[in-house]
Image 1 (cartoon, rainbow over the protein chains, first blue to last red):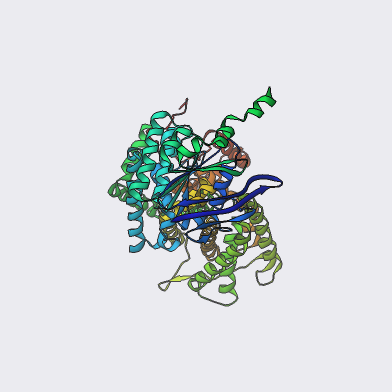
Image 2 (cartoon, one colour):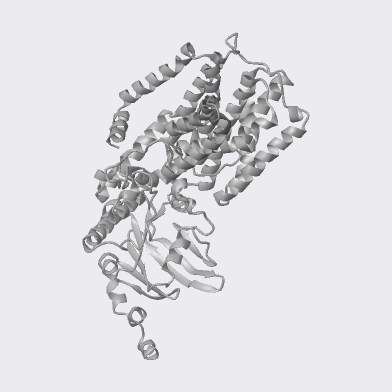
Length: 260
Length: 327
């Protein structure tokens, strides 16, 4: 069953076409990747899916509901959570507080809850704390929970972002270049984590990635874009042997000739 | 540096914290026993600034919004109470809910359209609004025009009229405790964390599901309500208010108190406000220097800000903190 459907998505920025007539599905319970060379429009697709951009035309549906025109926070409340390409943590707050932010969309106490601290507010606060602690343990940085986010190593900052996303108990997890800046060891942990997230927690994962190793290793379905349009899709093996994909990544023979 | 870490650790223990806070409260509460009216009056000014600074801290310190017209918020409370007591002869205590309601309405009117924009715009709009409030107050007859309102009746509490400096000292002390509890509860709640997320990174906050516009508005309303309440008490304590009490300098003073002490830190904000009220008073009595006290005060502010941009109150040190080269 498809969890998210992108239909004829087009995104233009004052004349420049970032995405054109792109359509694809994300199946429920799958690990799907969107790949493509630099500037292929991957992040624009991502930003359209999360409400940070309003697409020029086309439709994005999540569980048969259109997301077009919804503010990012509304989309998060529907169970879609994202991470950022260049880690965006709340730098001057502790790791635990950062991870607790994920719970915002699945909790509801507001001003009155804060001022009165009635039993419902206390219970909710306890639940948030418990689940955030669990998420920290899940990604393996529970011992760093009281550190300020800005003092963490890059790898741990990434982990904090994943824990933060998990705390939202999402249906769909969108990872924007999760392997960027990680070493080999950390990349291996990441691909195991992505599988665990899907297998244990039942969260559908959609990722944008540069790192071919990770994509081919972890994903079940791959969509390849170049110049904002889809050039191939299928299993990792299928796209790997697709001539158009090889061309997009390595450059075509004609380009080489022209360059010479 | 070690000492600060140790102190923070000790304060994490609930019993020790309660003990320390109770001790501070008792010491402060006994001040009227050994200080004369002159000093109590200075303390009242300091406490008044503390209340304003705690209110503004919700907007500036917790949420990271820039409000350059906080004077308007307490002017609204002060005039609401002043008019209701003087013209309509209401009891002071009944004016408080009205003052809160008026503060909320005004905060929504200013906040709703501007908080959708980048926070720089709020600074300009609040600055302009503060001037509008002051000039309106100066030109309306119900607000007593330029001379303001006089002879505002002092309130009674349990059949006991609040008149002396000492009475007001205790009223303000209770208010400060209430404001501290409110600030603390906000900071350590889902709501307060959301405000901090907005301050740290608005896009990421939005991606975590925070309705940033609404939460900024809540913070702005809360700050305005705390300011309004302070204004109401100020009106009956002073018994007279005039447009000059609410000029731009007042807004700047409160903002500086918050920044000087340390934005977002409750003890910092209190110390900043106390420093602000007491420092010029200490200098006043020194010959020669006394006349130039504001100059020295300005210099001191510059020095503090260069050396401690995060404010006077120290941060908790964490294991991985990179210590500055020179201590």
